[in-house]
Image (cartoon, rainbow, N blue to C red; front, side, top):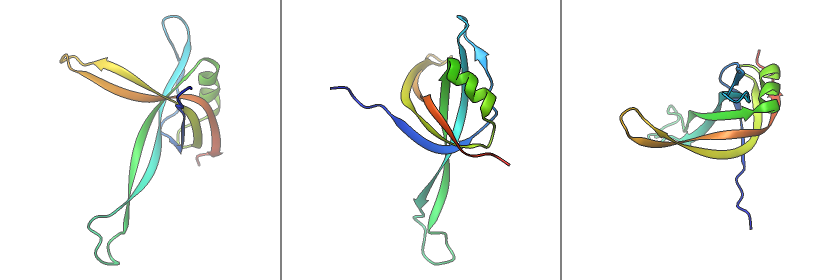
Length: 117
């Protein structure tokens, strides 16, 4: 039985995606998608207080090869998109010697919901 590793998010592209190339000439782009989340205000006591507060999460995304080239040519900062992909973790060693684990979403499909103004 295979494990499921699928991520689906909707949000806004944080910056114009830029195309770059790896040392072995693979095209790649990295960008972030901003996703808003609401949470209940623990200090809510009266109608003057906001019952729900908003937090914006920054989700790092990577796209490779033809997908990267398509994204760079067709999407821009502020576009609202739906992203389907899978989660990947990376271990990074800092200059201090400490190791940390980060994550990114590897894009499989990106669909435009609305164009930025």
